[in-house]
Length: 372
Image 1 (cartoon, helix red, strand yellow):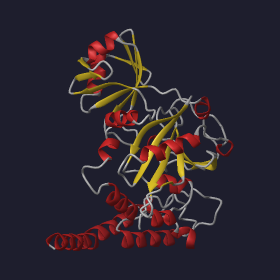
Image 2 (spheres, helix red, strand yellow):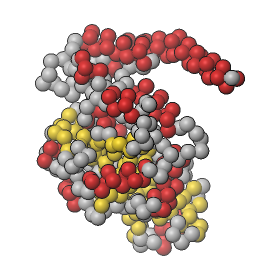
Image 3 (cartoon, helix red, strand yellow):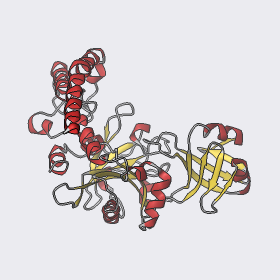
Image 4 (cartoon, helix red, strand yellow):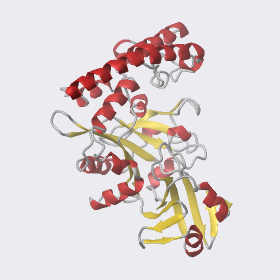
């Protein structure tokens, strides 16, 4: 009874906070930030709503959900109305329900997904292919995983030849990732020579995992060869029967010289059919990097003519892997290697904006899979 009262009080305080602080704050932000209601359209060929109508749409989003729709233009809501407009789920209720279901306990599997070292060890136990972990470095201590011994960064550089991807252990959105090549004591950082002192300085403020570089499938390199292009595949465990379903998902592709495929770093996202791996017609940049395109800007490959290799295996393995984790939904980052899928990581805090912008509104799936 006491806990029930605490929960009711907490909910009341939350409503008061959103009503008296958050909604007025975002309303003022809407007035001051023109980008929220006046951007270039991703669909210039369609008749667009007036700026006043878009402003009113965003105002309604604030008072209904407590925040404007950050992805309003990416979803094409400036040209969509009625059922099509309402088919897009706002990020706020999605995020709240996703976290409510995935983070019910502090002792669940989310810790495995959020730590790249744990993820690789756990995946290997179930026969899931992941990048090979070479070393773990924290506070100037470097641990060689296979050899099971501590060494120094200086000895690591002097005694080995490696081609590595280096990642912040709990990093997100491609932040902090760099390519590291070591040969005969010489160091290349993202293909540029640096000293060991500079490398030590760059990794001093975080815990890093050094992994071998992946050799992706020739078809994936044909699309763009400077990054490992990965699938973001969404699996969801139904609350009704426990069956694991797959949401419309995306392929992320690097572009314009970037060594990572994340859209936050300038990459392109393209929706695809999980049943056959065939890409949709359009790829989407984040607004800071561009809009919509039918072909890759560098390779000039038309997206709708491209099929992702080993898609059936990727879907089957994602479902299989998910079955061992006590989480409701997971966003998998999967590379396609020469011999099949390679699971880079899983995310309990995956985002719905990519699948919605590159495919369609997912409100129907949200209400059927996230509620009993």
